[in-house]
Image (cartoon, rainbow, N blue to C red; front, top):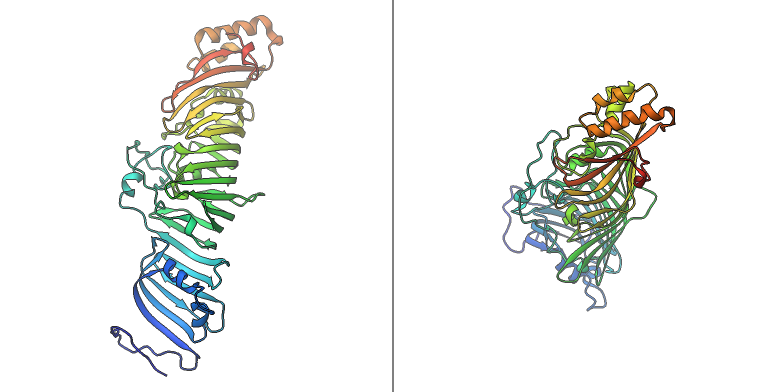
Amino acid sequence: DGIVYVGTVPEIAEPWMPEIDAPGLELRGNLDVFRVSEWLEILSSPDTELSPSEDLTRWLSRVRLDLGTLDVFGQNLGSVNISIEDLMGTDYWTAALDGQQVAGSVLIPFDEEEYIEAYLAYLRLPGEEREEAVAGAAGPDRSLNESPLQDGDAVPAPEEAERIDLLAQLDPRSFPKVRFFTGELLIGDRDFGLGRFTMDPGPDGARFTDLIVDFRGFRVGMADDEPTFFWSYDGVNHHSYLTGIILTDNIAEVLLANGFAASLESDNSRFDARLNWPGTPAFLNAAELSGDVALRIRDGRFLQGGDGPGALKLISIINMDAIMRRLRFSDDLLRRGLAYEEITGNLTVDRGLVTISDQVVITGPSSVYQISGTVDLAEQTIDGEMYITLPVSDNIPWLGLLGAISGTLNPSLAIGAYLFERIFGEQVDSLTSAQYRLQGPWEGLEPELQQAFGSATEPENQTN
């Protein structure tokens, strides 16, 4: 019984003593660098009848190591204390990790065909030296490598900065089989929320199933589906593929958390997505997305006077619905913004160019908006059309409406509307519609009224 020191004797006030009553050998020490990949290779070596790990458990009961650097497949997790307890007679190692960048427990089986199981309180991966420059960029080409805006922050102008893929040095093909959970994932100063997955590496990359992610208000794996994620790597290029249902609550909070102005509020939203992008999972960038999205956003409003950029801002400058509501003295008078009950649509994305497959339909309590065309997320432009269907109450004479919407409608169209109603009277349907041209940059977009009085679903029959 006692202590055997190998190497430099540590300078401690009181000598450490092992548990005398515990059988086996207790090992304690410190290492400047501990590389997980190298130790896994040693412990799973098939060169002997008994693997080194099985042999060790015959006489080693406990390990306590103070590591200057813990290297996990190329990721530096800084200084970590490792404690491995109750080793004798087991077929796995159970390690407790305690450090500023990682804390939790990891179960490592001796059989490399079994899954390593990691249950972490937090995992905080380091960022890059240039990430502050990248984080200064704003707008839709903000990647998930960039810091989110806080509520009330001014949105800075976009800057040209080289984006850095923080996980590009990793090779997912070399990963072990892992079941993983963390209550908190940080990369640099960016919070990626909680996460859970089962990872199976292969010759083309790593596949992630049993996937749950809660990242900046986006939730994956919390609906009636089984989302999948594939991290592809051919030795040169990384590519990421996500299939699943993405849920949110109030989308205004999600927009703020991801660096956009809160131009839209909602009770909830759902996005059925099949998306992919070049780069690792951490390199997600709206301007380089490709795939298909079916969206449904419920019960909210477009906020007037948003100062930040964003595709959704273009709706908030169309104020005809708000004008109609004020004239009807509806309860929307006390609410700020243009209310809607549901937004639905199917989108196809090709490297940041969004094509509305059919129409995005915005249904309000007393109006319907239908939008078609394309949106360029990289250039922040739109090229499309919008059809608006609005109710006309019998107690709102068109003449009174002329003054209210004179800033929105062409005067000749407004006069035509009045004469049309005077001539045909009750034959005028209670719904009227208008067609707008949407073309140009999102910032300062001026919709151009082209036609009025036709059906919103049959623009070719509209009357100029």
